[in-house]
Image (cartoon, rainbow, N blue to C red; front, side, top):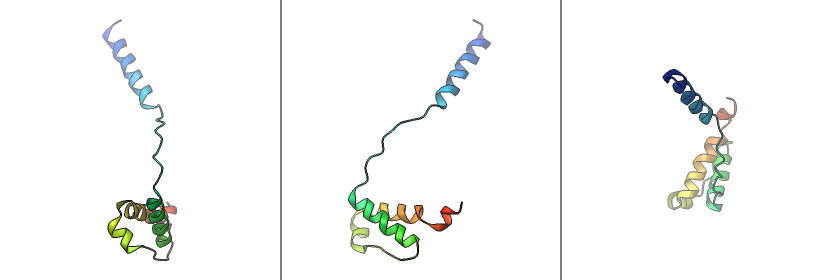
Length: 79
């Protein structure tokens, strides 16, 4: 097999593997993350809701709050 055919065969293989999907299972969200996400979503929809104690002291709650605020923001939904 000449070098050009070998190159094209390898290049085709690279493109085909790049098109496959990944089936990585997402880890379930903790109850504190879910609570923060709900509060952040409520905030994004116009009613400020945040448990300040949890926000300061619980990383999962604060990450969920920011995610909820971002994902439920009406500006993001219009795009």
